[in-house]
Length: 273
Ligand code: 8IG
Image (tube, rainbow, N blue to C red):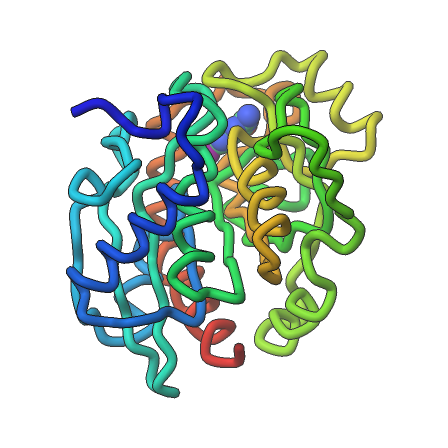
């Protein structure tokens, strides 16, 4: 099936609206309040935040493509929280490195906004530049540096990115866990990890976390008017910060070891929204 997002003349917001209508129809939930994108290590949170009302393969919704990576989940779930709110959980993230274009990368965020979500929680697995984050720390994203040289915004769309990662939501997360540290997320294109020299560059620029997602999605979420909470699970220290080579197996293992802990953390944060 060809993805309608590939048609340059199509309107990506109309496609997101269609996707949102399909989600409403397939879940029976007319609108959602909160959306979460769960990255590496975070999938468990979906089971902890509430009761799953419906689960749909991403491939059944307009504009979504199949996940490219082992360890990533390709479903969209509607979850009812204990407080009665509805959360849309997106396991079907499209990464920039998949080369489906930036519209595909942010389609889930635009769809979430079209379902009515006012809060966007973006999570990821990432590399840490601060050595004290070794061993699977969960950290709040305070800001980002977008090194993709791309933007999800089209045309002369000027969007303010001050307080992109809401201070209010970071403070709320720290009510759940006062020890949560925060840092600046640097989105690289990937899929290769950085060289140690690139990690030093990111550090010099003011970065603390290196990854391959989230920044482009956050920009689209802001364009859509959502309030954003960003969180990274530090599954590895960045290249050259840790002395051993990086491996996807290490990343998956760190995720497994952390999933119960960060799932509980995220569910407690969501309960406060
Ligand atoms: I998990 O060290 C994970 N994702 N760019 N660098 C980048 N992405 C990552 C890393 C990392 N770890």
